[in-house]
Length: 277
Ligand code: FES
Image 1: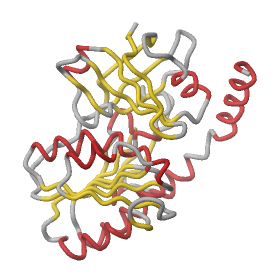
Image 2: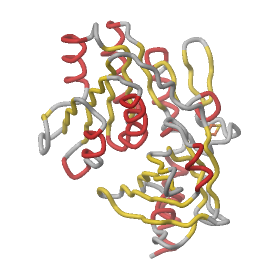
Image 3: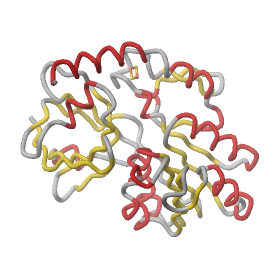
């Protein structure tokens, strides 16, 4: 059992949960994920390690409560425990000195972006981050990302905070103005955002990385739900990823696969709501 140190709502339906697990905290690297089970009968939920504190022996997860399992998970109070917490899993991010890097975080994509940006900054890179959300109420961890960035650009779809724009707009301007200095671009967020960011980056020929952690289902390599075509190869996000060359991902195939379990997820959510109400 793994003690929940804190569980707080950062934005509507988005929670930050810090859990005690000294050995995991010791081994965690940017890019890693864990599998969580809230209780014995719960589903296995793969979640990115959004932060870790080796001294305190804790890891931090950011959870978007959109389905039955994640709602059950965020309902756990501080002081209670998780039934299972397994990891670190996945292939850690390659932390190199690229000179300058641009980090695009859309919505809850800030959770995986933050530890990568921090590590790239510590490695000596100039970090330019672009953080986007639909509106101000959905922005969180702006201070955290800002603290590891040399430049931090905020965008919202409705202009309620930062610049009224999609993240692709400052990304394109940045690449047009200083593309020759930028050695790598990360893009993490909704698949549709990553698709359009990869299209922006493509003509500049710089290394571009997308993290597909949000498409994982069981995180074990068994369900096949995280299958993705990268170049000519078929990859499993939970085993071969979660990071891939963004411009080689078949985004249209990925977007169509994301709809596969919509009906089942809706049924499961309705069942959960009828039990708890
Ligand atoms: S999440 Fe099931 S195989 Fe990767």
